[in-house]
Image: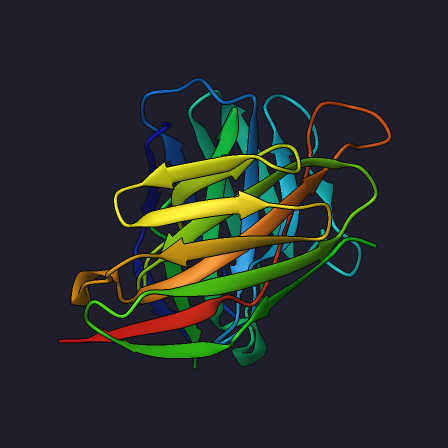
Length: 112
Length: 114
């Protein structure tokens, strides 16, 4: 299956700052990537679908101005959490779909 | 709205003690049901895809089955390295377009003691 990487694996930031998370598809050209968020002991929740060369599609309740997604190439999608607050602290995971969805290793965000 | 419920929330087994995990689902037109394994602090690792009732898939000590309302993940003679959270997800046929979202359950935390 597709191999997906994420960077950074862990980030700590101060409240009010912005954080960028990268998702790379290493062996598959992905026109679509997915961004999920997982709170402790909760299920993965889809935040948005990232489309190469066009605007992302956000799930209901996800603020598009707060979670900026850029899918500039077939191998890279970025998620920027703008003006992060402690409630944004979570585990962010991206995936690509090659018949099934394959996930990256995740990024742990802690906002102080 | 698609829903996935997994049970039990947590399961402790002795090494070699076989058991099953349950995934009940409601979906408006099932495209596929997926099982993933997730280790602490890591992303989900793909295990199986099931597409239609009656289908079965096997991999080492794991066997996944599917009915019209639920799926089971059977673990035969588990080992400590099978300890992980097992996630179930469904994918429904969309109303349009080619991107189909996954709806996940909360998972079953499996601990296998030596």
